[in-house]
Length: 238
Image 1 (spheres, one colour):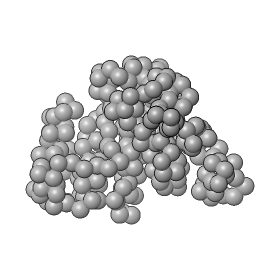
Image 2 (tube, helix red, strand yellow):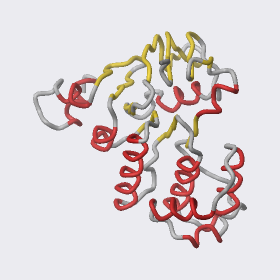
Image 3 (tube, helix red, strand yellow):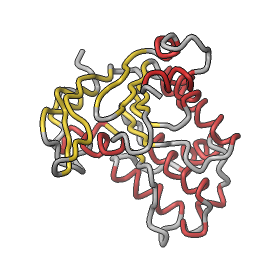
């Protein structure tokens, strides 16, 4: 069975500045891979290249064995950007209805209400303009749209951004349920602990290259200390 994602000699640069180069890794179907790195390491740029928002300068990326530049390759994934900023004039319900229709899903009130319950988002958020929602509430709305899309692959850039501790715990529970259901996830996070609890493998992007690719336990073994943060620092030479 083909992997969900495959990066082959992938490279991106801006002028003479190399963001990343010669990246070789894949995300198996039904697995979770966390992409870690310091600010400016190129994680978001890599995701933008995957989604064809940025032009890849070298190599190729395939999504379910289809070149990423073909629009049909992206019909099997749902994406939440790092800076999720939906149109403020839309009401919560309008946003979900529109998002689901774009994914080819008929909006179902019962399914929407159940998802809001799982994410601890009050139904009243559906009856308010998005500009009136807090950052956390808007983030939950974006996550709800992704989870309700029923896509095989989720690409989430900092999905926990703006969430309080309770919401973070609930999102983790939801993601683990999706993992049990066979979904695939590529995500970024500044919380290495959360990433280690969720993912099968971690990829550490540093100075344009993969400094590490393997399981959280394998990353922890790099450092003699138990802290995965210490292991990460050792991995990047910090």
